[in-house]
Amino acid sequence: MAAIEALEGPQDSVAMMVKAFDERRVYLVDRLNAIPGVSCIKPQGAFYAFPDFSAYHGKSFNGKKIQGSVDLSNYLLEEMKVGVVPGGGFGTDANQRLSYATSMAAIKKGLDRIEEGLKKLA
Image 1: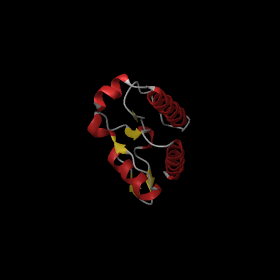
Image 2 (image 1 turned 90 degrees about the horizontal axis):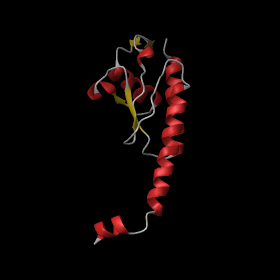
Image 3 (image 1 turned 120 degrees about the vertical axis):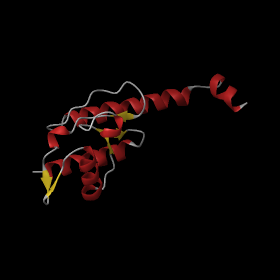
Image 4 (image 1 turned 60 degrees about the horizontal axis):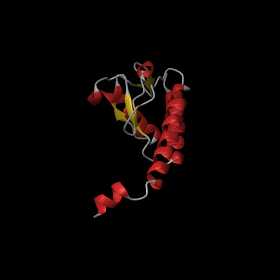
């Protein structure tokens, strides 16, 4: 009965969710592309962006070198307290996987921390 209601019942909440996710997706991609050295294409599905951060590979923080997506993920988690997923498991070590299946406030806070953390790399 629940499945039938989900398919045949009112779809207003679905339209609201689609709109909210699209706003988050557009914001995330635009904000990532505004960070020097980062490039991101607009995802066409799911709830993830897959930006290229390879411009930051080879840089360091406190003597620790960022050699790939795992190092960058660890750095962002440890130093900036923001979680991203290394891209190696998704086909390229140049990228990180970021979810936008969260609130806009959390996305903004996470991107602020990512941008701040990238500025600290030399």
